[in-house]
Image 1 (cartoon, rainbow, N blue to C red):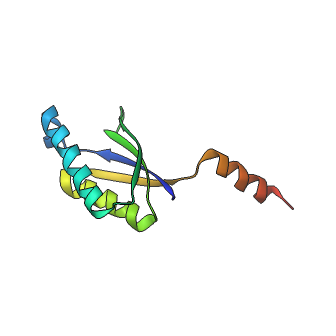
Image 2: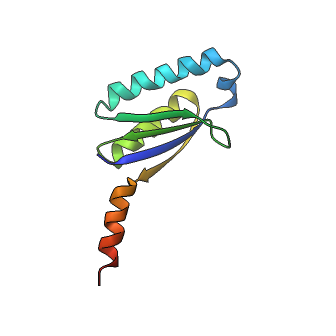
Length: 101
């Protein structure tokens, strides 16, 4: 399955109380599992910088990855940015193939 990286910025009203953030994460998890059962979470990080969280997950296609982002946005009033990712080993294969005459 393709890999996706999603950066999330939670609305300030949800970050004022840590308990609210935990509840928000649980609710997003419940909804994603219900609507996108084939999604496999690889990593979830709280990060410093312009975003609050970074998730790495596998989804069957871009539509399913978009659904994960939409669920995340609508549940917490969050903004998301989602990118497709290619494992480095696969990138090396692609690069070698592209370098052939």
